[in-house]
Length: 174
Image (cartoon, rainbow, N blue to C red):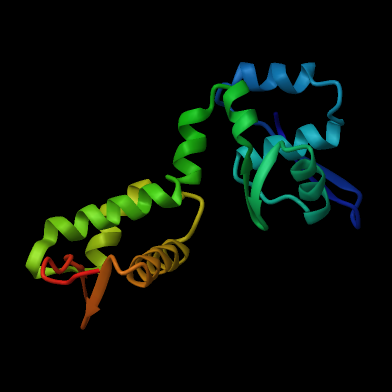
């Protein structure tokens, strides 16, 4: 679908046409879905292209479970991704589940052994599995929260700037 830019003040409409092929299955589903208005179709198309949409429109699409995420980082929903065969891109944008990221971080730290692992090294390992629609700072914050949770769970410890796996004490009795 083309992108529309409407300037209400100057009463001008701009239309941007793209030279690449549009996902036919995606377009067909939008056409076949009789519950979607033209405005919703245009907004959903904008979301899949990574463009911003208004908060009001986003609320409507969220209520219909057509998109997910938080303002302004929305993405098409898992259901739409499955219907339109966009599951690889959906997974890339949303990143792995938090529990999987925790497992990967723990595995990296276990592999580091007695040397420990610094957050930057853990991030370099995890960044391809983290949400691609988030900034580096947002993903570093996510990683920091994951490491903090693992520390609070007694799985990791922090010494200086390095993270270490907490080894169970075999002489300790319950």
